[in-house]
Image (cartoon, rainbow, N blue to C red; front, side, top):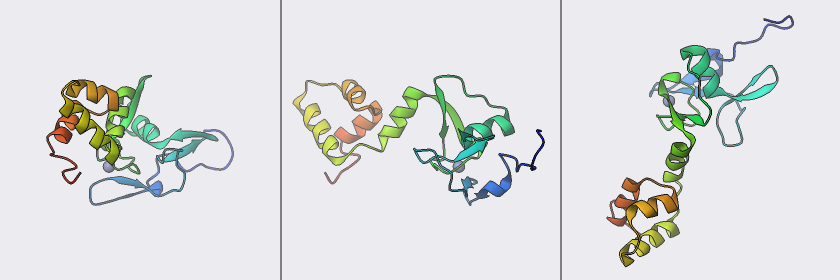
Length: 144
Ligand SMILES: [Zn+2]
C-alpha cells in the first residue's frame, strides 16, 4: 500500500450491515447514478459490487457482462448474492418490473388482434416471453 493515511479496506464490514436475508446492505450514501453502492478506489468511483466480487471471491466480470443482485436488493454487496449476466439479460430483467400500465394494456390489445406473437412482443418491449404470456393470460396486472 502507498504511504499516507491508512485506508479502510474497500470491502470493510463497516461499510455494510447484514440483514435477515443475508444481504450485505450498503450503509454509505455513495451511490452510482442508478442507485447502486459505489466506492472510491484511490479517488476513482467504482461499482461496489464489482469490488466485493473481485476482492472476496476473485470474480472478474468480463466485458459486456454485469453483476446482477439475485436477491433483488439494489443495496446488497454480498458476493454470494451476485450473478454474472450479459448486459442484454440485465436490460431484460431490469425492464421486467418497469412496464407501465399503459404498456400492459397495449400489449394485450396487440396480442388480442392476433398478428403479433408473444416473442415479438417480448422483443419489442424488452421483457421475457414468459412475462408477456403472464400478461396476456391475465396472470399479472389482473386488475387492468
Ligand atoms: Zn442480497
